[in-house]
Length: 236
Ligand code: C5P
Image (cartoon, rainbow, N blue to C red; front, side, top):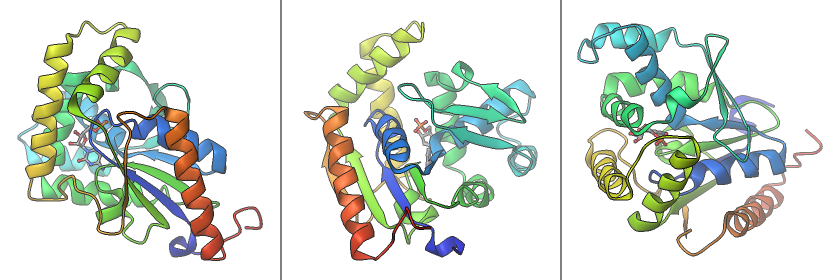
């Protein structure tokens, strides 16, 4: 199977829409690989921080990005395991501060362009579920199925609050509401790869749906699409 023939399920959406949880469950159900592309930007923000690189020094930032050894392994019900340079980087990547720095890095076209190849190498047989902001629009424009998963800011703040509390982070609901709103604005208004549904994406509002309901809906859609395109994932 050549790269372009490997099926991709792209799940894009704003922070807290549930795309990570949903994406992992779809990947496991399909037996496909999984890419948490937000973790790629978070990983870079983290590496920059621990290596004392100045975030405004573009050359040093790009150099670190070029040499990033990144691997994403599904680990439901939590966020996926992220391996950096052969070491498990878990909770360090998940805080709001790293998320904010990730989103500042993600607004720089040169950074996005360096990280594009790294993301595309995740497309391996028998298939890939990729979650992020621009999976369907930029990274995998030929994806087999594109989902744009969304939810109200209030519901997303509530979900993020519960997630972070469980991990022991000291957060406030009002603070998260504001942080999510700010991040939405930054991600949607940037010039390069802004957060937006692809024209051919199926939009699902998950505000009043359970994770299982969203997963079932997406699996029905992808299985239909694979059947229409004559792709037999078991036979490949
Ligand atoms: O999804 P997550 O919150 O982990 O992403 C962190 C940040 O990385 C986002 O706010 C966004 O700015 C950036 N990002 C991106 N493109 C992606 C995935 C994430 O710009 N495909």
